Amino acid sequence: MEMRLVEIAILLRTADVLHAFAIMEKEDVFKKTPCPAFLMFDNAAYLADMSFELPCNCKPEEVTSVVWYFQKSMGSRQTKVLTDFDGTVVTDSGHIRVGSDMLKRFSIRMFSLIIFQAQVEDSGHYLCGTKQGDFFYGYDVDVQPSKGITVAFEDRSQHPQKDHTEKHFSVFTTFWAWSKCDRCGVRGEQRRIGLCYVKSAYLYPRYRTVTADVVSCGSRSIPVRFQGTVQLRKPEIVIRSCLRPCIKKKDPEEGVLSISNLIAKVGHKPWLPTVPIQFHKQLLGSGLIIACPGARPEHAVAWDKDSARLYRTSFLIGVNKSMRVFIDHGNHLHIRFTQLNDRGTYYCWREGQMVAGFRLSIGYRGHRKRTLDDPETKYAIKAILTSYVLITMVFVTIHVCRCCLYVFRCPAMG
Image (cartoon, rainbow, N blue to C red; front, top):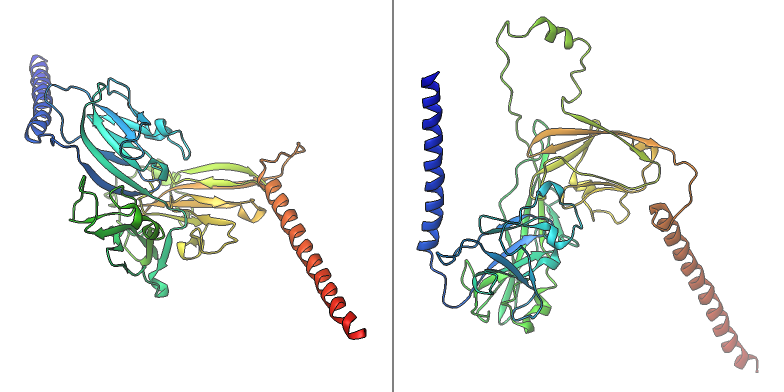
């Protein structure tokens, strides 16, 4: 027992030394990275709904906590403080939802600013400093929109956008690496994200880039006279088919399975996936959005309904204008105006492995007062207004034609 206590004491002592070493190592990094005399901004580009981290790469040795600030444009008087003045704001990413308030989507940990599910309006300047207003490090963040994004399917011989070149600048797409295959054992799909970039010798020199004279299309370093043309180009996604084998689990050694486990296997249906199933009941005619547990927008995610594969070539948002069931660029499965044939089990794949199932049942709506917020009410109003406009246009066109015929016939008769 005494020997055990001695071992625990040694381990705790070792952990304290390692923790102290980690802190000293962090401090040494700041010592080796002096802050620039003139504040510069590092350019960084992401796609909307992604999460990312902005490290404070330099600070004076005597500063023990930092404060992060946000400016929409350089020199703006409207500066937003993203963290408290102690630099201790910590946010649980599991509580972040689409459309959450801006300040709820930021967190500061070990001098770094973490941004959850960034939106286009989050683009701007991020500055690391103190509560007295001293700035050490800055970022020029460009969050490019996923709405209206250009999609190319390699299986259909579709190709990415061509580069656009003008006299003083050129616009092109820089692609990230291919994602993992989103399914295993069956045909899956891979996705490649491409962001818009500009190459020009006329960029503002206060911005620092990885490649000389190259910045993302939403950077504040691009002169105003170029921005009109640059903003017309959208980010893009390329999708292709893939096939990868599933990792086989090791079979248990002979004699390991107990009789109770063998009995439990009696009646088991081997063709059904063995993943956790969540039950959900949805009202007929209402909208539903299903998210894959633990998945982020940059992950490879796929959806199946029972034995049918919901491939992006047919179900990606924007493929058809009148899509009732579709997958958005954040990997969520949308069902607009649920119908009885939507009943079934929806399976979710994450990074090539099936992880969860959702058994959906459709119920009838009880008698209740309709509101303008109901999806079916909005759809009905839109359909009625559209029909009214079309009928009015036909009515006016007919009468204009009759008047024209009457005007041209009267002189002939006279």
